[in-house]
Length: 184
Image (cartoon, rainbow, N blue to C red):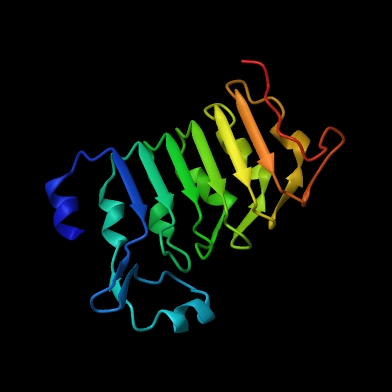
């Protein structure tokens, strides 16, 4: 990844996913553990071949970042500091630990999708207000540790689509556990 960061200084789109299993050697490849990893997950993957991803922070011109089934375990602060990022998708990364407040590292974010972060995504949806002038689409699904009041998402002038599913800790007079689509 270090060579990529040097060779591709203008990279704008990056997707990280599952690295796979080598059937001939019976070895799994995974990304290096981050800060404060889940200890049980770390023990179960101690024989895996690890790949560092800290050089991702050198892709300062990223506009799109997708993490889909990436074997990330712990906190990776450098994944949440791309000032030009406009699209962030995190799906099925159940051991990636982060807080909604980290979205402040993406001041131009237009689309945010997070699904399947189980208990490792924390925070309050009020944190999205720092992006109220840029967010157009928000999807948060199956993130039970996220809490807040549904009405904290009022007055987002560009918001066209808001989908909140299986979010038991969201409250508010207008919240009934359904998807909400404001008029464009």
